[in-house]
Amino acid sequence: MNVDSIRNGYVIDHITAGSGMKLYELLGLDALDVSIAIIKNVTSRKMGRKDIIKIDADIPIDLDIIGFVDPGATVNIIKDDKLAEKKTIEMPETLHGVIRCKNPRCITSTEQELPQVFRLTDRENKVYRCVYCETKAQF
Ligand code: ZN
Image 1 (cartoon, rainbow, N blue to C red):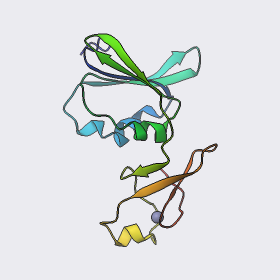
Image 2: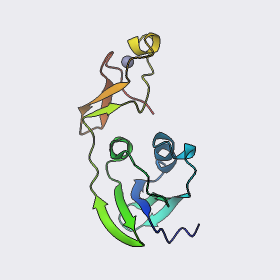
Image 3: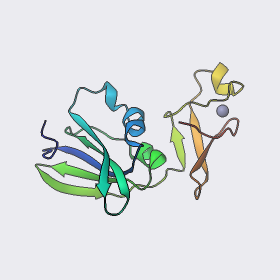
Image 4: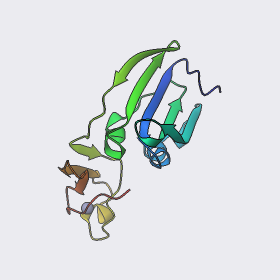
């Protein structure tokens, strides 16, 4: 894979340096059989350092996960070698089935079939809390 040329896929840019791997994991990209490049600690005039993820495949991407991990990231959708669309990323109000609650006394640790739901409770500080036990999201 030539990391500079993506025919159809995504370039997730302006990821906070160090968050690229976490985003890769939460997006479930490790489970996919497609060409992916994670470029870490790229020099950026705007940010100092940043990570970039390039996905050379037209697969569904959950923008909510990107908004949760790094709302400052930008998503460029590439079609036929050209930039087709730039997506604005926003922090989702709720996050479904992405991360698990870490509280061992949370009802979701005994009732495994309950959906894992977190709600944005503090937009300024990017705080998400479990809707069942109010535990702060960690990832
Ligand atoms: Zn909980």
